[in-house]
Image (cartoon, rainbow, N blue to C red; front, side, top):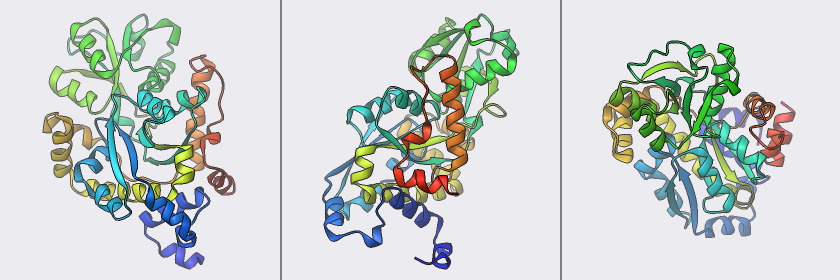
Length: 334
């Protein structure tokens, strides 16, 4: 492929080719046997959460149609949060999924054999630390000594670290209460915690349904990337299937960016939340899946180092070790 030809490729096609290259296989040059092997895969098992591009993709049904042409089925499994989704990836119950910044750090530190295959742009307003509407807490410094609900190892875990750092409050000086979103909301409503670090659409639901007040969101503190990950084994064996999945994600991103009302309609149907709730959440979302860049990996390394310094993960990690070998080579030469 010439450089001039590459420049004419659409963003979606470029994404697909970059992933194929990362796996060491270009679709155009794929041996017939390898193509047959990819087409012969019975199923791709996708883990998703109650929000985001994969939820839209599931709701629109376009991936099933595309992969049916290859003789491949799609199985969707919903997870309440990123850490348990990656546990599913690690034990082999799913092949591909999306999570925030922190879950891959914890998973990699625990020895999970996963790889980054793409990410959505930064979306810092999509997560926040909230307090009840009648709370006397007004600043981040007021969190000192307080009980804060959060999902351990999730993206908001890093938000909390950075928020406390900004306020000059030591992590040891707050009382983290580790709960999944549904249990955290119940604790928040009961008043058994003082604050809640949470992401959309649970954040939007707390604002709309409970009158929760945002003490601080991620703006100026964290990037809040959404990452697409796959098991290393699946990614190495099935690059063409994952190329198609990422291409369909890119198409949904393009569509979603330009159709906010329809996005809210689909998300409401898929999540069971009110349209006003998901419309608020969707207004803060950033669309545009792209290959994982050197800058994004550097950002992830800062997340990993922060957790390591507080001994929240069992050992330091090198984030780029969770890239496919060809992508490591490509990014290191840019």
